[in-house]
Image (cartoon, rainbow over all chains, first blue to last red; front, side, top):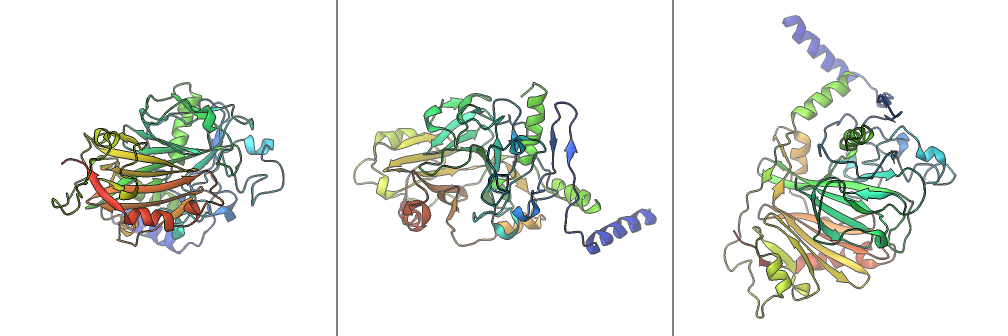
Length: 242
Length: 170
């Protein structure tokens, strides 16, 4: 028993003194369909920010994947090929439409984000659909709920769980829902596009999850990491049980 | 690898997917609930008829008959279609995650801080807690790059300062 305790203390001690700032490359594979993904919080490239590496907690368990069908690709719009800070090229470059997935929650942004290191970062993840075609691929409800809000380029779904899921950049003319409409899991919401009002963005779905956390007697609404929940959801989609 | 494993074990063990309803500290009668001289539009009164939390909206838009109300007993979202922008106010009394106070990361996050307005994805917004309920204000613009309502906090702060309680039942 003493030996075991000593071993644990040694492990803790070595983990504290070890100066390994760069996370280990942990590309993970998944049997079937060739789906691979980097670990949650492992941002690529590393200069794109510091994610919540090691936080594999599934904040929104059992949600449906927000795009109607696979394949889909989570990766950076800003640091990917053709992005503002990415290698030169086209946003539609095939390399942007490949596995492995790369988390981009907490990627460098000016947004206030309590769960990101430094208090700022990207509040959700960017998802590319199967290919670069504009307004061809449907985003769908991840949970049964009600559409609470539709703006110029955003749609909010409040699920039965109380979580609020936000879909950005859908083609506003393609929306299949209205404010106050009850929707079921998997119901079509709208087509993925580059809509950001009069300002255009790249063709992708920005998806985020806002939920309330309670600590002691206090509570706060925060954008929580969606990546692990989406990996779980995507695996179900690939298995044909979305 | 140890670090990853230990961090993950610690993190997961300190989270709980327990969900529920927040305790509301209702304001004293006649202090927050400002009775209107003329009745609010029916779209508002009917929309929040069953809402069991204090309902706030800015007095500026309290009589806007075109407001869109989506509400239930535990939440409300009211949006106002402005010229080339949409303003939203929402309140919610549910929680999805209960975290022990031993979790220093979340404990730190809960410390009172000044109201902050942030522009994310071109949308200006703020979150705050009042009476134990979580509220959100946001404004989304057709042209977020040039519209000052979405670039500067002044517009939203002004609306925040004009919030009045228009309903909600215990």
